[in-house]
Image 1 (cartoon, rainbow, N blue to C red):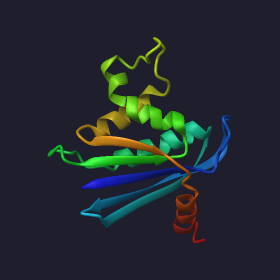
Image 2 (tube, rainbow, N blue to C red):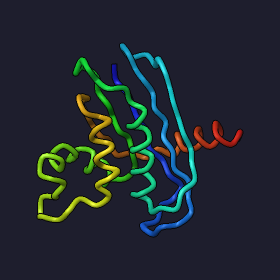
Image 3 (cartoon, rainbow, N blue to C red):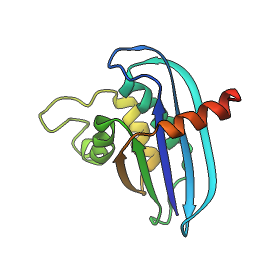
Length: 143
């Protein structure tokens, strides 16, 4: 079973501001969608922070992977977040220290993501996800 998590925000700025963030999760088995979940919320964050909140919430909905056969694909338009997803367990192994000796920022959120996704094969993809943001707005606000 694969779970795809699409992360979105309407904040494109590196500055903290009032914005919305959300996620759309889809469970796929044998090429067929077998379930979905979504959320769309308000926050005051920068682009990266809003997407990390979305990832933290979505990861928190994952069931523990006891078989070791599940995979998770994180889709985002934020390269630093995608890189973080791929570095997650290296950071954890190294005591939440990045490769150049700096501490990982927002450790609390990243630790929650690491715990929630433990046992899953994790991949990340960077691409525009505006389509999913429009779907979430429609679902959450009725259009």
